[in-house]
Image 1 (cartoon, rainbow, N blue to C red):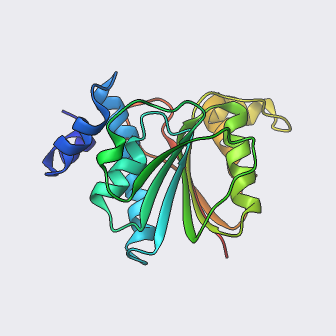
Image 2: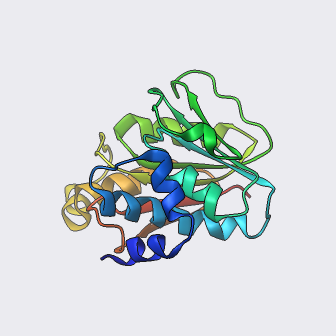
Length: 200
């Protein structure tokens, strides 16, 4: 059992989260990805308990915002995806699932942590654009996935970093504010980079 799965299963709320979303394909990998982001969310939430809303774009099965709701003192968590999932989300307090295309106009209220787990190609760039241009969003935690077009980097850089990390670094350079780029080896995916940012 991987580190993050073992930690997840040690929480009393683990069964509630699993009961809410039902069976998950590639369970341990999915849990490790969400838990990797949760660690970064926690560092911001604990500085302002019950004041921050987690908004997770391209949310899929909504593991990241569900974990945030159950495990952290967030104000609320909101999952956003173009496809609405049919799960037991209505039973969870301080949580909602919104069907929305992120290329449409987005509305945010209060103090927001914007998250996304494995946004692909142009979706990652769009999420960064939303973060950069929306004053309510104070923090960004983004884990990129499928590689988009990387322009302006010499081949020697791509060879040294590899295509995925070059893509992650390309995205990192688009983010405004104080920022960092990490690779989390406890995430059970080759796409295990995380961009963390906060506005000055």
